[in-house]
Length: 493
Image 1 (cartoon, rainbow, N blue to C red):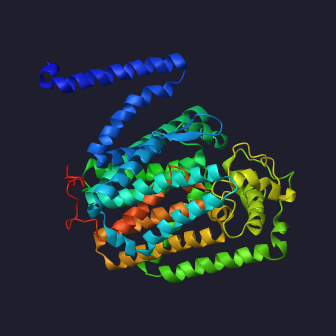
Image 2 (image 1 turned 90 degrees about the vertical axis):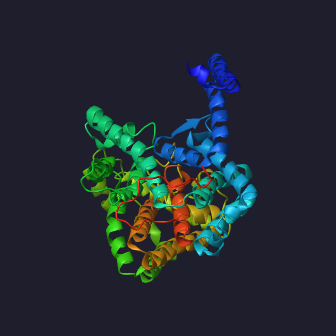
Image 3 (image 1 turned 60 degrees about the horizontal axis):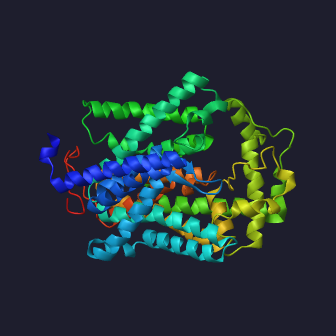
């Protein structure tokens, strides 16, 4: 019998755990508070975290594509199970920094990318303290902290080889691909791939089709990294090749314009890296953005782009949706302009430190210009400005925007520098990580998804991986195919 092979104390602990789980489940059902039943599981995860925090990190990564939003009330929500896992791993990371600080690679403090990330966090804290709503702003700071701590700081502790990167790939690939297959099946079988029904097909794992397509497009370049890990005759290699087509199909039927643009942007970016022209290209992008913004702001020139309220409508097929976008008659696009105009006026009122993190929604309507109103300007979903750079300057002021822009520049400049100086195998890894960053930044031009667990976590994890690569913390095999063995855990397992 199984019980004969288990120590008496361990058996008693197992019985106690099962009894506690059943008891709390019944209490949860009786009180109509089902979340009570997860308390034993939370305790189990806590014990697991202390004994094997590296495997818990990979579990967290695997949960990202299939996490769900859980609302405790109209004003309080969380992502399950990812956010509790992030908070737990933040505590573990803090404990590691205190008890095993000698294992932390302090040489990363010489990297401008890492320093600007820390400065970005510090400035968010300052903006929270002086914000219009201190409690709300401080919650946003805390959520940012438990994104950065496990996905950047902890990554510097535990990711030491290409085998670890491969584990990250599979932890994301398996659940995300299953979610794609489920979405395509539901969208095709029940709704015949109609444009207006895509949001019904992506739940409960994704809030909407934009959130879904963003994660798919960001992970898409990783397929080109993975196909070099296996011989061309293997099933795994063929599966990855098939997945490339599957992901393109998924992005197309998501009907998300920004993500289609993100895929296209990866092509010229490859040549930017290959030809080593990153610095002039970044300078050119900054100059163009400054000139365009200056032209729109000068003499309120943006008012010339006010939409025709009667003709700015929602279209129920994708071709009309695209056509109306270029004609300035698509309601979702023009609603963005409505909020961008409000954001511009908010910046004029609070230019240096902004209104505080997470406070755009509460205050933007009194700054809006009625000439830009659309049919959906009541904003029942409580969404924000739909441009992350604008959101930062509104909520963190001009100083916050400068810090974030410098962080962005050093992500690509430091990544390019390492790309030019390293071997082919590591070079390919850096290319893929930076192409994922390109997809993220293209999405940020028309969304604010860096605050979501589907996008923000991957953003900070890529920063952690780039910092680790720059610090020579990750080793790569010299042969063509990665060794199947898993690297030894950083915590001595």
